[in-house]
Image 1 (tube, rainbow, N blue to C red):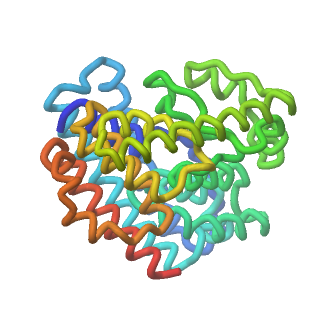
Image 2: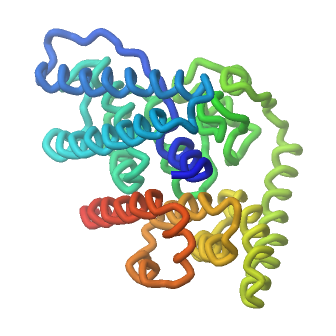
Length: 333
């Protein structure tokens, strides 16, 4: 696994989201389940804290770090599998079912199930129903809503998702819908920290724009998409794949405007051009899959993916697993 491939895995799938563990009531309906969920959360956080410390010490190119990253990925898969089973049997783990702390812990496990965005999306209405019944934390819904939106390349509502990996790397908020009213929405979901303070905690600056500035930002995002995607498509048709990929990378950052076809075509351009940012191809294909794109089986046989497969074999195999899990969960809808 090279450095760019590793960055993709860590930034997309291993974003750290620490969550406090609250005390649980002794009258919960499923105390053993509550303990199991808490244990899952504790293991998740113990390993993520260790991973974060290794990253901060600059060990991300070491064999030990890469091996530990694989272990963390395996833990995520294991926890996701078990949480799917729990939700299939009990529905959303509510305060009444498991207690406030374990209910929050369940959300954290789902929040880290980035390798199965279809499962995260399936959890959204269940969590919302629990919130509406006073049986789950509203802020958890806000964070998961944004997570699902970002996984599809759509705009987020609550400014909970950024590219900074909780301050480990340089970054900023992914595009926000109706940006001037973002703080109002956060407060409505009981998110106590202001969006400016939240950004500062992740080592970047952010200031809420007024309505005029927000509209200007939104218009600029759309114009950037229209301009660059038109060039990217033309360059691709002329087989100028490197230039196509460069413009697609700009265009596909315009969340809320990018089509599923854009994501797939951009991945092809990156692979065909043997682009230095080839790891982004996996991210883009994951976004397409999260939207329910069903062309992955055909793409597996497509020669355009040969470079991606050879350069990042681990990421390609992981992408196949993502596609399999998404197919399973989409089939449940």
